Length: 433
Ligand code: NAD
Image (cartoon, rainbow, N blue to C red; front, side):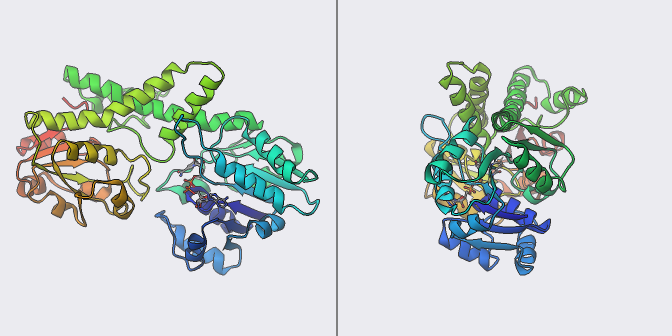
């Protein structure tokens, strides 16, 4: 099939490349000339395992190209996928300006009566497919199109794998012809395909992300209660997770969720509910717990030093919002580091991939180093923020030998608490007695 993918970020670039690898002819469009130019010489602007090889292979086989020219891409396509950003606005609503602009540009680009399916892959408010169809038809009243919703569920850090092996595909189709074209496009990926209407499909995406965020805030809340009663959240989560109705995933207590999706999507869903005069109490509680969670860890540190961390050096292990990505959007590290520096601590930070993206988000005097052991050397405390594999390998002995004071705040509960304590380390995890 001939595809145009508008927006070459984490979603557009990965899904466009994977669809090319399945044998489709894909033109990826971005408005940023610099990005397109980099992609044409295989300089991949995001960190995503396995992506560079796939881009190179499919570009060389003439199945994948990059351009700023949306007109020719739409002209060529049977299916146009919209994958631009929908960041949060001040009110919490999704900023739909990028999607609407693309809809207008698609309308301007359609000059013939060829049938095309327009697909929203961006995470968008319920009702957007209809709105996009209106905007396209305003530009080109004779456009022979249907607008559908196929939300994206890939995870940064395993985006290529997730695209080739999705748990499910949701097709929100407004028309039978569009439905069968989208089934043909997606059927090589999985047989777990749910076909529904566009509005339900748009809601499935928000509901899924809100549910995952709820699981995180829930287990963090239980961890905080464990802290107060000397129970161990690791054992509690294991015991809960063995119940098939609960399951073990997303039960790791930590410093709260971040990233480019959960924070904005929970807010956007709350905003949608409030627009229809429904007060979403659970969503509000999920956000409240998350807001406080990283702050609690700084409080633990403060308590260890009797409320005076002024002048101390804290090593921050990890800046990205999760391992295997360079994405710093809404990363809890930013909040934590600002709070520490406001309290007068010096911060020495390390991240294998995200350091460059982090620089502009952090106070100027934060010292970013290349190596984890260099970060902890002579620091007064170490704070594990992102559970990169290489940080998990730091031993109790390393911490003891290199830190000025053997204080470890484990924001992801990855270290062996008992071993660390046996080695004389002042260890603080989350909900870990
Ligand atoms: P991104 O910010 O990484 O990329 C968006 C791209 O769109 C940018 O390269 C930008 O230059 C381009 N763009 C904006 N306006 C354009 C226009 N008029 N023409 C051409 N290109 C244009 O965004 P992302 O992380 O890929 O997310 C895209 C959407 O997918 C969002 O709605 C997001 O919520 C959703 N989503 C993201 C993820 C994720 O893990 N990042 C997962 C699932 C869903």
